[in-house]
Length: 106
Ligand SMILES: [Zn+2]
Image (cartoon, rainbow, N blue to C red):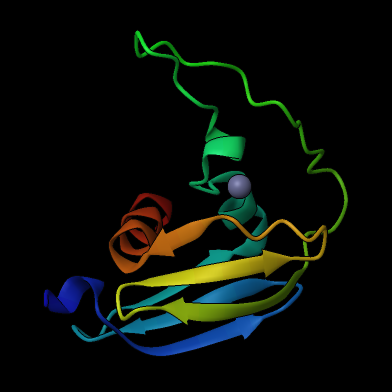
């Protein structure tokens, strides 16, 4: 596995950020607000129809209030599933995705 997308330490600060230390020594702090907005599930990113057109997400979440995570759990050894205070929990964040979010944020 690529050390750039292999976490050696994960720490969820439930009303702030997800801290990740990667196997290559890099540390990332991903604000929860950003993670929630970048939720990769179909409901948040919008489903595509048969022609590949982007459909608008059915549910629009307001991001004005505080963003809180209830918890997170590992999915296999490649991803993290985050459960949010609004009980949304279908987003599975692969470590590669998290690392790419970190890269675009720092
Ligand atoms: Zn989602």
